[in-house]
Image 1 (cartoon, rainbow, N blue to C red):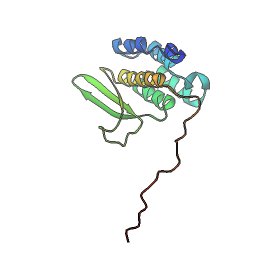
Image 2: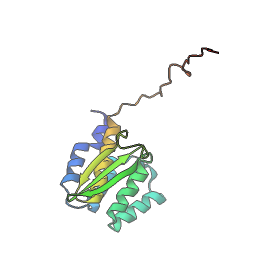
Image 3: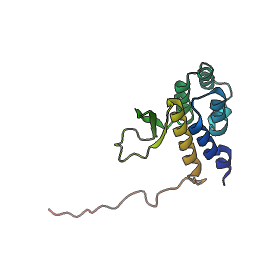
Image 4: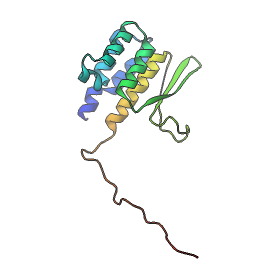
Length: 152
């Protein structure tokens, strides 16, 4: 198990989010402590202060959306739907692609904020599982050969 996976501990945090009936301040702070990388590094910046004020005001959905925006700047909410007593939330990197082409991360819960946080945790777990080389790879060739026959 990698250090990132040990730090995140996605199964127990995901299970706690699924089991929670509603968001609470301790649960939100636990998500920040275990799943956020940028938040602790910035200390008391304007953006972290805003998220903490939203948590203090119990504006759970706004706090969850601000946390996703802050921690996952390349990801956006693609779909938020309420169906049969549950909120279905999908986060995506390519929101403009058709559904069948997009690799969105989806989560569901009876509470909207917990559905958003569950999707956030799933993205974090996915990122922790994806191996990344220390050196970026370079394509083998910088061009592709084309047929250049002259049929005139």
